[in-house]
Length: 299
Image (cartoon, rainbow, N blue to C red; front, top):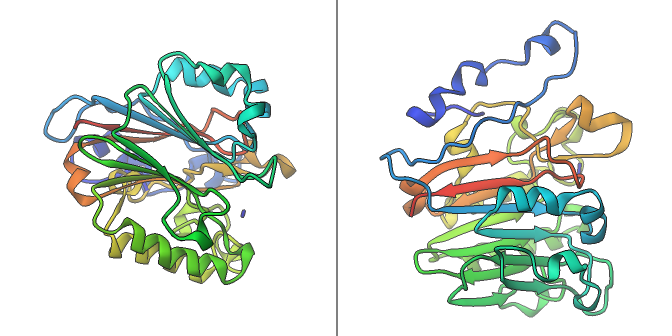
């Protein structure tokens, strides 16, 4: 395992501090922290956001609920909630998620033969036109890595991507996944298990041989962006914002020191970029080893 600033009004409020390191860390006075920013709810053309999507690797639903993760969701009130690593079969679903307020349409996927492993969830305020699981390749659909929901103006693909700890499988997956995604007007979100560039993790030099930042992984991510093609919504708005991470190990006080990685993403088809209002990282919401991320669109 283990850049906010661009042209226009959205980035101007963040760009002043985006390119430089945190003053305290530079002076040796403390860790460099990422400061969550206010939500931007209008597109570059001034249209108001009408869709809010949250994505969160919960690292086990039952523990996440005990740590008040569901309370954060209730307060945020997303239109769509995508969950990864639910680690919970249908018959053991916590009562709090059986009828969550405002998200009546629920879809879940988990390996039948691996209780407590992997698992995906998609909860929506609006009923999707169509929902499916997997990428239509049996080799890659045994673990339930993907849920696909079709809406009027886009296709939402929620994914939990395997890392290179599984050897060559990740490279085979990347190729199949790119093939599956081509031609869709899509929002791809979830735990993609790769830090794309050095700015996306705390210690890039020390992690070049570790899963999540191996050369073939970030190269494959770049190929995904180019081939489909897709844009990293956070980096589109904030190309040089450092210390913006979405996962921290529980060891050695990593969260308080902000020793983390950015592995969770919202990737958009280029045709949807004019509708992009904001792409947020909620680094203070730590009911899991990952924090949630949010996308606002003015469709």
